[in-house]
Length: 245
Image (cartoon, rainbow, N blue to C red):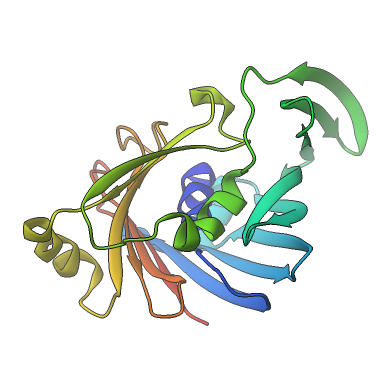
């Protein structure tokens, strides 16, 4: 359940301004209602940036996942107005288990080194060092913050393919689709009519029984996604993430 929440939140932001942005989101799932919250902070200037996203399960989801929480951190530099990842960190906790992942990006050699550590009751129980079989300038956070700049014409139908550190199961592949004009009514029905542009993002992983993790997005005037919906989830309805602040 929480893996699904996290994947939705990754798709909630796009930005092209040099400033500090703070945003809060509620995540709900059909008859279960609210299952989690996410808090995000982006800081960037002309030379460097940092992104810090914290996720927490709530209600029934908190009970079922032993109080699961996650933190995703991205740090790097700015190139031609785009954020370029130098370090991507993921910290996951549930019960007495904590997992740390670090991805260090070597842009000169075009490679990414991953460090994995698992702790139980504060004691290190396993660790691993690997080299990813692909290179990318983006991680899962910078990719979505960069979309507003990377996609120039947001109304022209097109399918874009990107690569992102942190998505190694699919060798970094992430697909973003700008829908055809005759399909936009479907987006408006699901996401509302107040968006400036709409898209579907595919992370090519099965999330909570949704085939490839297809997320419908509605992006507002400020370049931040106001609502995201994960469709085709079995049994209890759609997964929805809505910006509340």
